[in-house]
Image (tube, rainbow, N blue to C red):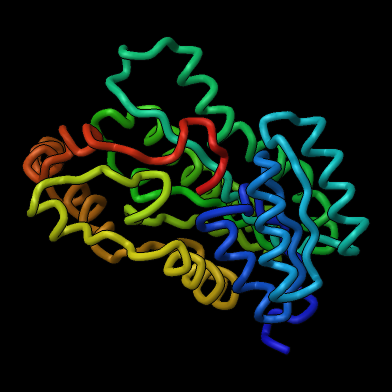
Amino acid sequence: MGKLKNTTVVITGGAMGIGFATARRILADGGMVTVWDINAAALADARRELEAVSDAVFCHGCDITDEEDVRKHADIAQQEMGRVDILINNAGAVKVGRFCSRPPSDWEALTRVNLVSMYYTIHAFLPEMYQRNSGQIINISSGAGLTGLPDLAVYCATKWAVYGLTESLRLEGLADRKKGVVFTSVHPGILKKGMFEGSRMNWLGELLLPRIETHDDIAKIIVNRGIKKKRHVVIKPWTLYLGPIVRGLFPDILLNKLLLLVGSARSMQRWTGRPPMDHRN
């Protein structure tokens, strides 16, 4: 068996995309996985494919924006797997457009999926991890959690918040001498398929921020860097570091002009990605 033998993992939004690819990698490496997803049809397909890799998989329909549903399924996961070593908060959604082009209720709904849901899932699993001083919380943020982007104001806001939430929880754990519990944020760039399909910057933007070929490319770094090496921050591609570096060394206006120069103002005009409230990265 692989290095993850007997490791138990819950993945939200795990029926497709990054979540599914990560589940498949963990199962192939000897781990045990519980997949949550709101889409019943996608979940059924995922179950069939994942059971072909390993029988150590459990799949459940769960609405992560419903605290009671999260609590119920957290109990089920602990019963079925015995404990939960790792929680991967992967589920997410995107809505695009200028901020005032949508009512605040739309942005509030997006915030509940991308951020508030993590309050529920972390609150459900973290106390037991603290009790045994062992475990890991992996939160999927985004490259958009490092710099702002036009037409993605609330998406960026939630992903920045995920980054800040993860870092703050890590500091709380260190302050409370719970060093056995690891907190990791993951920042993927733009994938060719899936949530951001159809978006495109100009030639300079595409050169500085090359597209990621497959969801498995991100799953690989989640498993190899995030889980096995227990890194606090996982970023792909490396050019995503340029934003924070430019911001740190130069006036903010320079980064703003650079983002406009690479075509970010029109990058979402041809967006054809997944429906807005499809809770999967």
